[in-house]
Image 1 (cartoon, rainbow, N blue to C red):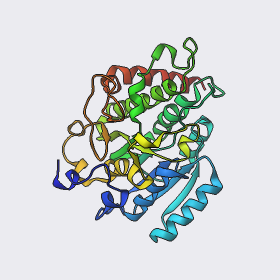
Image 2 (image 1 turned 45 degrees about the horizontal axis):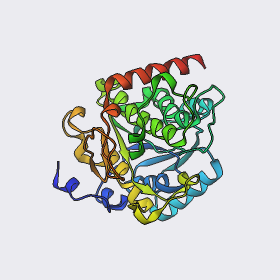
Image 3 (image 1 turned 60 degrees about the vertical axis):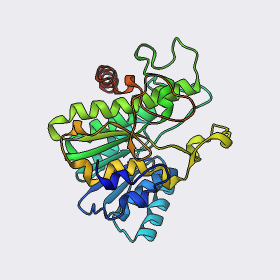
Amino acid sequence: MSDRLLGFGFESTVDDVVAGVDLTSVRAVVTGATSGIGVETARALAVTGAHVTLAVRRAEPGRDIARTISETTGSDRIAVGHLDLADLGTVRSFAETYDGAVDLLVNNAGIMALPEAERTSYGWDLQLATNFLGHYALIAALADRLSEGSRVVCLSSAAHLRSPVVHDDLHFDYRPYDPWLAYGQSKTADVLLAVETRRRFADRGVRAFAVHPGIIHTELQRHIEWDTSELPLKSAAQGASTSTLVATAPELTDGAVADHPVYWQDCAAAPVVAARPRGYSGGVAPYALDEGNAARLGEIADATLAAL
């Protein structure tokens, strides 16, 4: 790994990791870019000169954020598109109206630890549908626009260590619903999405990564009461740094796709851990990197999309 990458860590911000990076020829899409780390990611990409499309569920806040990013960065290359990941019709519409190549896709949007079980209109657990299936469908819908060597970044979490993907009971039909198991399963699914994206687009050299951003107080945690005394909290600018790093680092274009680890945290490749570690030390579970698990989940997702 290069000396530049080794210089980043827990406290690095998005401005640190994009310093000196020029992406003026890059077209980027960031989902969930109306709050928290999504805004910081979009802003940092704008600083690099990239053309950035904010794919957002709420259009008016999206336009306000786009205007603010333009004013603070001087970029006039910020667009807004409507995307509700739980509504697959809007995923198709976004892809149909999106103009141009996709050099960079940051799957940032998500929901977390819903206190009560909720389902989409087509029967999926809402957390799994929003965090995983909507992004899976977005990649599929934009597949012909993914350029040679493009990058896909999937926002996961250390919470994936709470649960593998339970393929035979994805939607808690037979298990009691648990907010954290549902969230953990959806975040494991996001790592598997990166694994499967690498496999499916290997012929084009698409580089897919999953990241744990850290613990940040944002709108995402609105259902949670944190005891912050023992948590290693990050600012939004720090929380967005790892996803922004794997999205932009010139060093990650070197070598084959397989040369670069799938899962990153604190601006570095994360270790594989055999069991759930204590506290929030992180790492990635082997079941989240398993190609068989990824392929099976992809088959289930394909069947769902084909039926709708």
